[in-house]
Length: 473
Image (tube, rainbow, N blue to C red; front, side, top):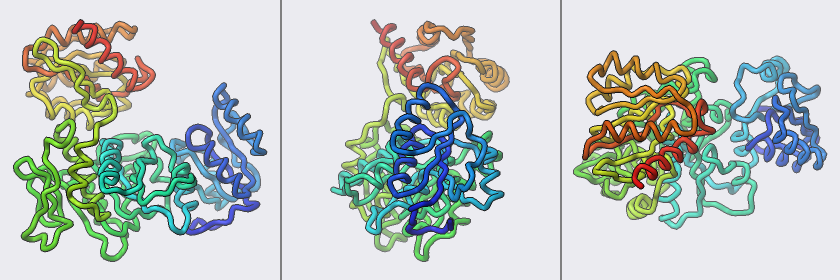
């Protein structure tokens, strides 16, 4: 079974699907419907896995629970869930047997019809979901049939194989998904930023960046990069793109030719205009972006660049940005109490995201901590120290942040909360209120994952918002 891109006859082919979950079940169903002999292997054997296995077995699909390591005999193709690490024995066995491995994104790409909607693709360490949602809002404002899909939670397989017809898709892609998508070729794509993340999965920063850079391969119209992040431009330079594809930068400063940027509070396009050496097109005002934090403005510029690459008019960029509201727990204003603003950015689960969040406010009482995932905090604290009124630390790895504060911001008062019960967030907010003064912002930007104390970042943000409301009452 070849691994080159193109239409595919799955009839009678023996395909192993690695992993159940959000991507594995629809992949198994799609392959089975096309005549493949499907075997699903899954590491876990819990109640949820057994429920999904029963659903698939009722269709005639073989499922092996508790065994995700060995390659079923006769396998001609492996389709994997994106989170499965490349070093697993299953993939080593596939490599030794010459069996190709695809992810769910690769499968969706291969199953597209001849008249399928092109993809405008987005990746980056932070800001992917917001940017893709902004992009979808802009495309809809232009009257285009579109959807925000991919790593954002809507399965690409469902979008590609469903009955609804699209003009274009706004696609969020993680580094995991890109690793397993060798033949993906987007209309245009953006890498928003690069910072150390998921290095335990990729093995090194170089491998992580290389997988992110796959999004540019074969781009037709535009490779969008972040002028402030040289690594993203380097990925563009290394990409093998179609002839005529352009490098398009976005910047929070005044744009040069072939860039989008900001001039006097106006988002400006000097890339998709005639005579870009001299001319510029106004797209929207910074006040059209909600909230107008610097990193959110950067997200808007990246979304605008991809939309403009697809031929969207300037008015649609403005209207789409005005209509857009971010998901919960992304620099969300919760309340003002006694002249102090309370902001929930629980989604800031790594240092890069927290740095962007901290850069949006001043002075700040910072609530931080959780699972560090191997991160260090010296650079983050050093850059943000002058903005801090105080800090309240929670979670398993709070000592790492406390030590960084002691080194780089010794004058900042720190409250170290050694508790993980359900009342911990209320105490954290209460302590933050004590430290804050009128005009300050109490900011939940943990710079850490949440699973030491909460189910996910959503529950952590909900706990913060509930604590703020209780304090206000």
